[in-house]
Every structure is written in C-alpha cells, then in structure tokens.
Image (cartoon, rainbow, N blue to C red; front, side):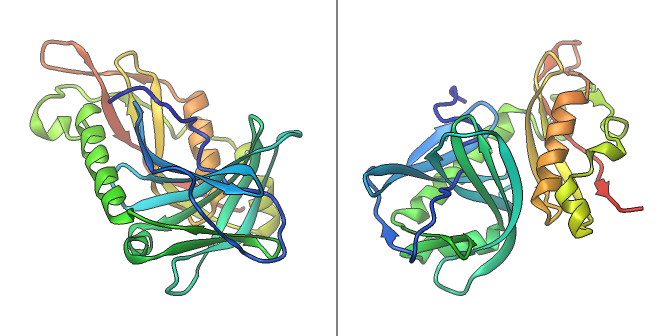
Length: 266
C-alpha cells in the first residue's frame, strides 16, 4: 500500500444552495488512492469556476460504500444529521447523511449498500440530495473499471492488514483490546437523542505493529450516521490494543471486528 494522497475526511459534498440541479462535468480523470488504511477514488468537477470533488470509498468488505463530495469552505466547526438521497436514475435511495464542517472543508457523507452502488456501473450520472436547497448532479463515466479497481485495492488492503491471518496461520496471537468499556452515556449524540433514534453498529479496526488503531471502518452500519461516526471517534480516541503476534512473537499488522455497539435510549 502506498501513502495517502487525499485527506481522510475527503468523503465530502458541497453546501452551496442552488435553485435546480445542473449536471456537473468532470475536469479530470478518476484517481484511485491506495492509502495505508483505506481505498479511495475521487474525481474533480467544476461549478461556477470552483472545484468540487466527488469521492467513493468502499468498506474493506465491499458491503457498503460512502459517496460524497468536497468543497472548500471557511467558518467554524459544525455537524448535523440530515435526510437525503442518492439517485443513479433508477429511483432515489433515501438515507440519513452526515454533514459537517472540518478543516476548511464542507462535508456531506452518504452511505449506501453495495447493491445500490452497483447501479452506478451503467448510470450516466448520480444525483445527491441533502435537502430541498442542496441538490447536485454529477456526470459519471468509466465507473465499471473504477469499481473493479477499488475491489482489487481492497483485496490488497485485506492482505496487507492480515485480515485473514488467524485462519491462514500467519497470526498466532490475535490483537487484544476492549472497546466495550470505552463508551459512556455522554457519547450518545444529541441529534439522535432529539430524534429518539436507536441503532447497532459494528466496526473493523486495523491495528498496526505498535497496537495503534490505524483505521476504523464501518462493517455493519447502524442506519444512523451520527452513531457510526461517533463509534469510530470514541474507539480510536480511547481504545487500547496489544498488537497481534506471529508464532515467533513478532508483532504483526492485524484486523479486529468489534462486538456490536448498541445505541439505546433508556
């Protein structure tokens, strides 16, 4: 795997309000980033002379995808959960999405299933809608080859992190850590509390040779984006691990599937 050339928060979207959705055209080819802990594809577009970036990131298991857009912004940090949709021309897929401002970027993150994303293989465009005032349509091309390359990248990612290391005998002692005790009632997101939302999420953690969590991926989405985002944030900030070992006692990269993180209202 090579080093990242695109920021981790690059699953992004534009916050500009427009009266109608104009199909945006790409200004460059797709770029596939083989990062150390994720596979990411992105492409630049132009709107009124300003650059936007459409990005696609699969989960390591290719069961779900995040699709989003990047655009520069200025202003304070914020975060909100919105109801939006993704439409490849076969009918819109309604889904909650996460919108936040981070590092001078405006971020909208949509998560859809692999079956829903597969519609992009033959779609001429995708329409992303966050609410009635934020509605963007991006022209698509070369998507089948792109998705095949993302799948190949993920196969390399799984091998690099020894995801199957316990089954193939490479890992003699798995990584050890506790993610159950790192959560508290104060971690329940306020917006989910206000909406009386509940859900269960499960994560795939990539643990390096020092026991550091190098990556956190949503393995089973909760259906509530703030739960998924908060789950990774809490685990990466607070959980501690001992690295996996081979039969000679040498530390190895590895992957850990967490138990379900259950978000419940009392």
